[in-house]
Length: 247
Image (tube, rainbow, N blue to C red):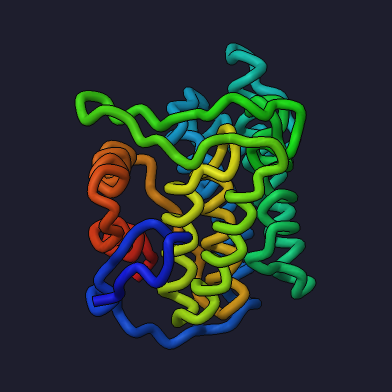
């Protein structure tokens, strides 16, 4: 049983439930990501209840505007596509890391014009008093660390959490990275989208295929995440993400 190593990660998990995988290579992983880019973008958009169809996402990725939708919905899809392309560029040029520079860069594209602020941790921008929460329906809500000026605690948690994640086997570490970002809520919005990019960047950097949560599993994903936020046990979510892997 992997136990919580410090207060930074905020959850535990049973690592023995994950398979031991032999990595392929980064070039292959990037090819898969590029080829399936429309699917990755559409899946991520559907998890946000975005009404764009798969065909409409493909059309938008081809540079053709799609009518009949809110501008905000179109921009969300565009942001997902642009941030995915930036992720490809970072991994291809061996510039991807789990550091703060990378996660804030990706967030600045993912949450552009959508989040209260983008590209900075909560408290590092103009807004220093509002702390968001994750609504869990009848289960209540998940309250992350408070937003305070300069985000000293969030920065400490991120640094220490990433330091530990880098000691894990890369496949396990990548999946844990997603849960870490989703739980700690470093940003006002777009945390899960940005954290999936961080997960996939770490996977592809180490030669593993990227993972997308299929649109058809959106309800299961949401249910599992509610349990994770409540119980702080990442085992089921890690197994869920592994089951989303192309096998």
